[in-house]
Length: 102
Image 1 (tube, rainbow, N blue to C red):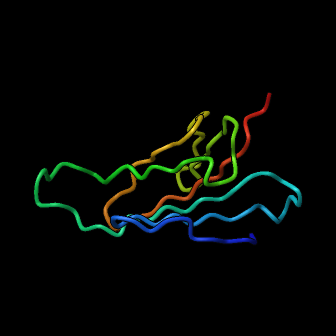
Image 2 (cartoon, helix red, strand yellow):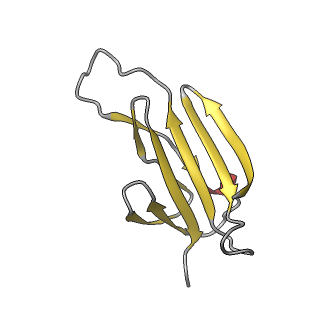
């Protein structure tokens, strides 16, 4: 991967994104790593994590995108505008974001 950049760090959340330079040069795909650096709150104790919102425009997309959770090896579907995966306390998520095929 190349072109790695931190896009935001706010309220205990960090987003890093990279352009897909290898193995498919010229691909429009982006890899996104989300980090939740927050401690689990005392109450409510049943919260598994926190949603971290990602605006697809911040990744360079102005079209619907397909998103795949690379850690769980699961397609999450198509999203327009933004997606907000739940990231566990002191956890991370890794996603591949691709323009939706027409």
